[in-house]
Image (cartoon, rainbow, N blue to C red; front, side, top):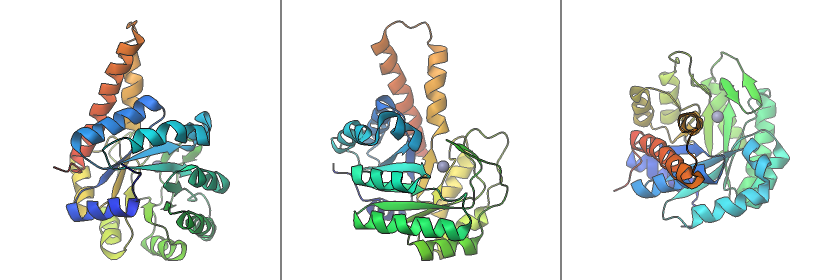
Length: 277
Ligand SMILES: [Zn+2]
């Protein structure tokens, strides 16, 4: 089906009381696995590409293989550019067919983050695309952004950011982190509840890999719209090569690896309850 509008996807999620899984892919195999998982569960999904992935293949080249894969699927899919830190790169990707851009200006002072994000929102909305913004630095390693800031986003800053930029969804730092958790993260559920109940802007959780089932349930119950999964896919992918280093048949390897990633994605979709009967 045609690439869907993310507003509709989030409205459906709110009505159905589930969170939409957003999965970072880095090649055709991982993208195909996400599409197959979504089709087999009849669930909406978001496919995310990092700037690193897009730069590796090229902007238009990425869309040449990714767009038909999504459009020819029976599943409801949105393609998002994850953690874009470059304003002109965001514009090029919108022009090339990304229907959502996550602009990460969280390393700038709030006023500057607002100013740049507002410009991207204006450009994106003119082209029918959607923008996710970030307030407060989400800990961990995300491409070239390495953050160790301990402070969570403040409610007032999040509110101001949403009102002044006009973003379509918000990813504030609420205590989750990118990469592998070394301990149990301290997640501020009160802040999450306050955002979902008082602010009319879909809430996105980054660093969704490796959390407890109880944590995911709390996210879903709080009305979180989108949960990002990246590390789980990378780990499953790399772990597979360690386990199967002696397999000689490349197609056999690809088939098994695709199935492994399909199962990782399906498991997240079922946990976030976005299966539609
Ligand atoms: Zn992130």
